[in-house]
Length: 221
Length: 221
Image (tube, rainbow over all chains, first blue to last red; front, top):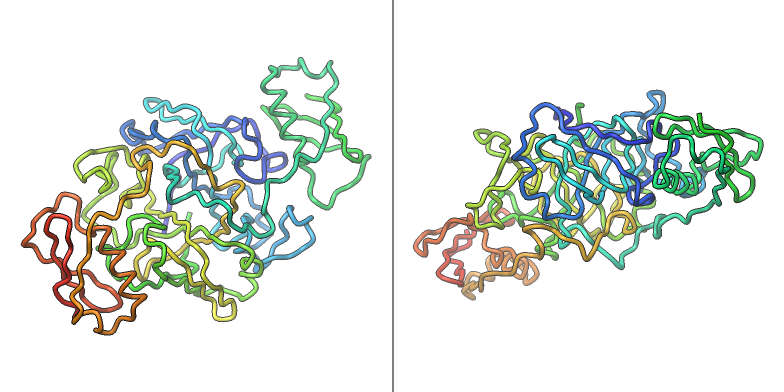
């Protein structure tokens, strides 16, 4: 089946590195669904009665040298343990489709945009469908969720020197940046206190290093 | 993007007519995911730790004379009220993808089949992805779900004459059949007590009519 993007996602995060690994982990992170060709204002009539929606999207940034595999190494398991691809939400799956539930922040039907909170989509991600989240058939609680039985803890204390804070970000943006960094964007098997990492955020390069449980931002360029 | 079926769905229900309108409505209804080309046993390793999974599937039985529209008439609203397509789970959407969460009943990795409960997929439906249901990011409760704020009530009392009950169905199958019929498979705008409907169930034709709140099965052939 041939599917075509109905919309594109806009986010302050333009790389996989730093983008939350599941929806809802950085619950205040704003992003935007921007509809494209074929959109009509009437298509969103009635969506204002819903608090959440589903996004079915494409893993557009997959490395092309990594094929879909039978088993993958989820970051959640430390990056070393292998598990069946269908027991994970890994991008490297036979059809590279992603699935995320996000909170609806505001709807602008005439412009064809929806502001959402908590998405785990990178800027520029193609979106193939959105659907209203229907609690009675979509929400299951008190159930087993395998290796992902609870949300990941915020692992790191984030330190941003005061002189860097005023560089173009308001206090909400700094707060979200701290929440993203506290999740530890590093690959699961990295633990080198000397290594300097760079994360793209709102068009700037946020450079940092991590020593034991403290992440220190070095520069924002 | 081109996507290919990874599996096909098997169900006792071979027509849209009678198939539950959302997942979980007929919670005891058994169905089977049967993986196809490209499947490897290892792909399901670890799925046994999860109680639910997501199915992303194709609306393969859409009428070809009905195009995707900006607004649709959900059965839940009586079939007359029009609402934006993205505020519904209607099959007539730009990319005809369906999304359902189902309970895992049993996994047979060596044969490449998963028995699931509560699906709203018709027999023969192509499946493009399955993903584990992860409670911490997928379950949202106490939220607004628009026009579908609660599960539909079982509307009809179902009467199956004793002499029909022994015709090839065991008591579990009869119990599920009653649950399906109680949901009122008729199109929302139908109310003709003389009209005889036929529903395919386990390869048989179940004929019935409905008068006020009582559905009476006439024959099972």
